[in-house]
Length: 423
Ligand code: LLP
Image (cartoon, rainbow, N blue to C red; front, side, top):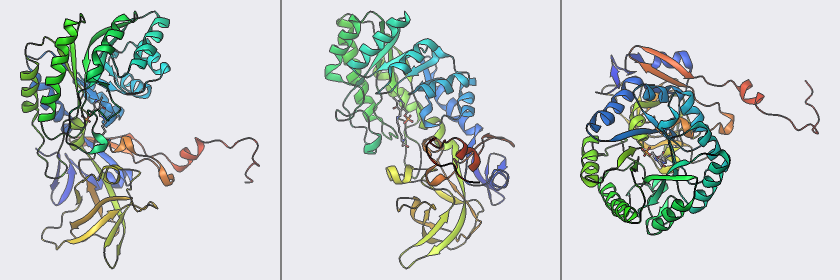
């Protein structure tokens, strides 16, 4: 079932017309479907039957408090990468014990905050971090429960900027050096090793890299146990892909079947850190056409959403489907680039698309924008962050309003030595 669909020729989010939302909140705006979020959660969680596993939502994909709360209500933990994300997770009611703290460069202050809050697991990625965490835990008089994230050196066959499990990536400890790192962790008195973690990349559309990585980590776990370590948990990370164009990402059932098979008999509790898979297809970005500019070689449709609102197309050459909010059955299409108003040639949402005729004031919807959309937005060109709206059936709520320009300016200060502005 699609939670974003045309009804009476108008694109709806569940029971709400996107044009009605646009009239209320203005454009551009992000819109999330609560039904789609719940369905994605159930698709994952309901397939875990009989597995000793927990799902920690990788909130970097979409850290809207409303979204985290919705998952939290259904029993999710959270995978965080900063103190800010931790504070958000706690503010949204995720119990500290269900928080996993990932990341390649955590500061001592952030580790301290995490230990004070009582987060359940810290995934350590370097020998230096082991030492820092040990020192911080010692100062606080606690023992930190850790996994060590290993880099299994597999090719996730995804975009280079979102591959994380190759030797040349900065993430995790090289699997060949892992035993040394575990030995060091075992000697540090304020650390308690509970397991091993991995995360090999994002937007994976094949299960082979998962299988290869799990097999390698499994061999490591056997060695580590022989070395005398207690390995009770295996954190598999996130990374499952979604549909942007014509991808065929694996089903959750197929993914979990591979995990089940490859971890069978290992006796580890499993942690999953899905991000994009839970939110990506549950969100859209809605924008209004400012003007259409025909050129000699190309026609540009200039819309009021830009690379500051959705950076994925220019950063990763990502393809997002773009559709008119009002359906034009039978209309001839024209080829165009859909671009924003920002002063950069990289400011585009889509290139060389065939769309029905569009003119100023028409609304368009950018699909599969629920993951790494709003969270990666900036206010470049002094453009206010796009608001976020959650729809649930026929009700909706603005979960983050658009800041006014006054609010944006009032966050700044003049240095006292500059001449005051005459008003
Ligand atoms: N766990 C760890 C340790 C991660 O680094 C990530 C994502 C995840 C879980 C969640 O991965 P997911 O299930 O969402 O694929 N901005 C990029 C994606 C960056 C992913 C970073 N790490 C994009 O827009 O494609």
